[in-house]
Image 1: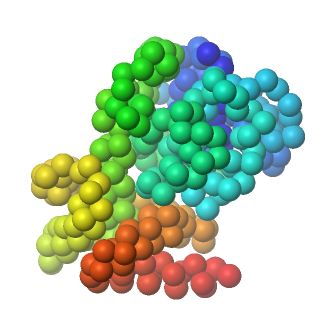
Image 2: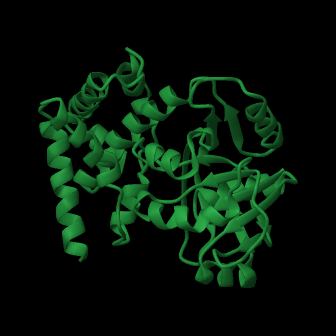
Amino acid sequence: MRILVLGAGGIGGYFGGRLAEGGQNVTFLVRSKRKSYLERNGLSIHSEKGDYHFNPQLITRKDRVKPFDVVLLSSKSYHLEHALEDLTPFVNGNTVIIPLLNGIAHLPKLQSTFGENKIMGGYCVIETTLNPVGEIVHTSPFDKLFFGELNGDQSERAEQIAQAFSNTKAEFILSSNIQQGMWHKYLMITVLSSLTTLMHAPIGPIRDSVGGVDFIESLYNEVASIMRTHSAPISDNIVDQYMKSLPKLSYHFKTSMQRDMEKGLNIEADHLQGYLLNLAASYQLNAPLLTTVYQNQKVYKEMLQ
């Protein structure tokens, strides 16, 4: 099976690297600058699950090779348009695309561009970053990638992909309810990124502050209410589950959005918080906490310009 990973950053580089480490035929579609770096230095993963360094197979959008069987799409949402253009020459009628973006808003765009039958659902649960010299640092014990058919079918192609993704140091999990998993992840990442960017702190000081736990639960309930009104397939007790797991999060846990803000980079506020606020407006719902978060993010983005 020929696997193409769009991007060789914290997400694509980590999971693509683990697949390559497991003996799979993996190619990375990268920008010219990243390609030059990786050709000189190779791709390095630093992780408590085991370090790995290798010289990856690389292409850029200008290269012409035959289409791939599976694509892992790990683009940021604000790069999605360019990512779709870059991918098009490497996709044919048999290609399966597994997007790993946070949120939900990207699915209709992918389906309209490539066709509904080519798109699976996907999401990951991991904490990674690139260090100052461009190496991948895996900073937490979890590294799960979930994928599956959006209609819940246990298809033959899904089973074949699951077999190819097995026997690695990362966890690749075939899900029969991928849409619920994506919405649950969307709820979690929206709340955690909202908290850490609004407070400019990791989760520990927020959680341990006076009134912190109540504030976190209120934000979870507000976001979950929007999703339920939209008939999103979230479970009845998902907020309780996330609140029970809150003490297990590392005191120093940071979201990728917070890390991006600390580096002065673009953020996915429109794709995550903004999309949900648009849903709230369409149902005439008030969302004062999420509105405050989004206003803070908008000020940050305007100051970047």
